[in-house]
Length: 263
Image (cartoon, rainbow, N blue to C red; front, side, top):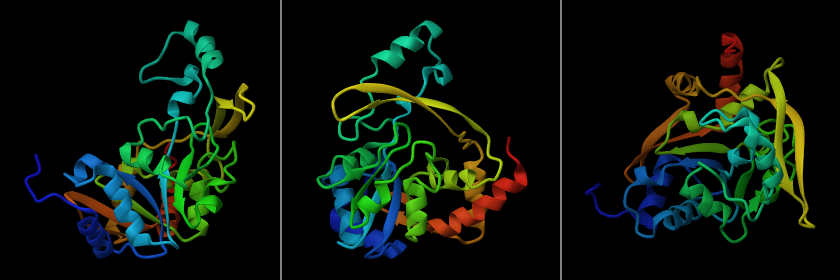
């Protein structure tokens, strides 16, 4: 167990400011609360610290993805029997911005998603939640066939000159790198499917075509980006944090991906 003194809202806010986060920032956060160490107040305190730093003009963004709402025909970890596929599709209660919890995104993301005043985008696979001054602008126009592209919260963060904070996690979780994939002129595309719950309570299984994401080389990509000096590293609580400008990151990643072909 971490034997340092407990971290608090005040100490975490001081660490974030020392790292370079500032008032008015739009920041996309990926976090492992376990690696931050013992925090008086837990995940709530971490969110309070982020809000204290970005202030009333800033915005916190988190992934709120629901990979359990994807088409079971494509499940591999683990796969399910083909006889289950129609049951899963027909029995799914459907993605709902308020009701559907995120899956595998961590407790900090869920804390932001359920925070009073938070907004969530409507994509049944790749939704994001945002809290702050630009929350509506970031989440309101998430197009179904552009999960991680220009018409997604990632594209909105890019246009707003936002930043990325990796808090105790590596580039394997860095969703902004997907925006660079979506910008490839010949990115492989495939059929997608998911259930959506409408306002009247009816549930519909939707299908669409979008870019197929591939994140196996994100750690190498992120490491090459850091070698340019593009990320600032420092402690936040007991975790190593990485702070970077999203535009600089994505603009580096687009030619990096293109040069390697990858698939």
